[in-house]
Length: 201
Picture 1 (tube, rainbow, N blue to C red):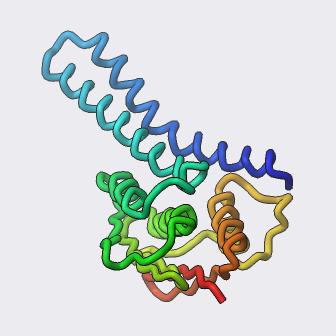
Picture 2 (picture 1 turned 120 degrees about the vertical axis):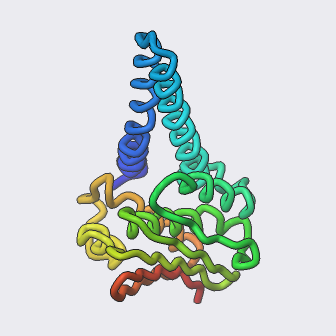
């Protein structure tokens, strides 16, 4: 799979993740435009505001994780973007400043690990971040923590790159970023806990 095809997979995932909040904002505007009752109009505007805020938070994270902005973003900015993205959902991000000691080139990889961890507890849970210069670790904890088999096959390097789906693109990008830095990505799971590690030799 060439870079254009892989970029198309990431684009498909981004569109999938953005369609819900953008649609919510659109529906809120339509409701407010046609609603005469002040209370219902206020609810419609609140729906619009929530949808737009969610879309903006997603874009802030994706421009770092998927785009060239990652190479110019500090860890503090990446941490703030991740915490903003998950501030209103079912996933909490525990990313204390003192738990992170990594260089600026590690920002994109670390944020992609966080996104993978969030996918593992999409039904609700906590993603904890700990990183040093040599090792980045993400612990995702939740009642139903885990990855679907097709994502696990990518993390285990058992899927041909020509057969990737948009849902697998996050894991594939994470592996590509780790390989470029000379890191190995490993994972382990127990009941309610998934740990992802990107470690330098």
